[in-house]
Structure formats: structure tokens, C-alpha cells
Length: 245
Image (tube, rainbow, N blue to C red):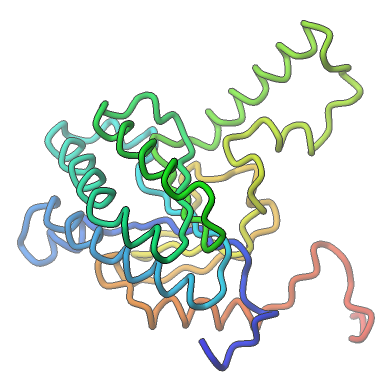
């Protein structure tokens, strides 16, 4: 990343870590093996993102829709999450990474909730990379919950309807206080949002790769960041230093 200007590094990168199961099945192995291999990639990507200068890294770890998967697979995923938190808590703290979770985490198994709270508490004052895990997360459900909170505030007289704007909505989402994603990376060749950060990604740059998550390396992350750096983000405006067609 030394050749990439710090001014060109996205502040917030979001990743849909897709393809674990298909990668494993392609090798004639159980889907759980793919999730195990994918979990090992998280450490590399977290370290690489921090060294590159990324400030926030949000990983789509488990969606609300994922609850529909076989019970054995869901249990294995949460077992991997607890193992990751146990193994990485000291390393995250040493590297000044701050962990944060978003989503309906009260639905997670008790041990997952306990370890999340423990790691979040230990790393709360760290000023390095913010690692955000989206767990039991749904963009639509998050928006519904935000609307309910805003409606309650109006009903109780704490908020006037004409005061509701984009900032008020953002402040009531689970991503409150986080910058909007500059770059979304999705692995395994799929090209959709899958109900991820729907409000927050209004102006996010998308990067899709056919590489499955268990094979997504530091080099693949660097390639995505370099492509982002080459893009011209105008946010609806016109670059006045270039001719207008």
C-alpha cells in the first residue's frame, strides 16, 4: 500500500464475505470447512486494512436471512465467532483496534453476546481501526427500527415532524456515529447488496470479485483499494476541471 496516496484510501470499507460454502463444496468438503477457512481470512484482512490506513472496516458476518440456514451450520458459525473473539481479543487490543457490533445482536447465543460485550468493552478506548461486525443484521429491519424510534419521539413530543431529516434518520440507525462506506467489496462473483447497509451506501463505490472469501488475500484487498483510488467520485456534481459532454 506504500504506492497508494493516503488521500486516496477509503475511510470506510464494507465487505460482504461471500462464497465460503461454495468454495468448500467445490473442493468436495462440507460447508462448515469453508466457514472455518473464511474465519482465518478475517485476521489478514483486518491487519491489511489497518496498515493501509482504512479507518473503519465493516464485515457482513451474519444476516437476519442467515437464520434460515440449517441449524448445524448456524451453530458452527457462532462457534467460530466465539473462537475468533477469544483468540483475537488481545491482538485486537494490542493493535489498537476497536471492535463494534451492529444488528439485532440480542438474538445471538448467550456466549456470543457475552464475548462481544467483553471485547467491545476492552477495546472501546482504542483509537486505531474500527472493526464493525454486522451480526443478525438487516438493512431494512434497521430502517424499520429507526422509524419506530423516530415515531415514538414524535408521539412523545420530543421531536417535531418537520425536524425529521437525513441526519435524524442516520442518528437512529445502528451505524450511528460511523462514516458512510466509501467502498463495498463483495466476493464470490455475486453482484447485489443482500440487504446490507441500504441507507448508508447511497454513494458507495462497489467492487465485485469472483474470488471466494476463503481465498481473498491481502493482495486482493490492495487491488480493490487501488481500483477505488482510480475512480472519480463526484457525488452528483460535475468536475469543473474537465470538459462537460
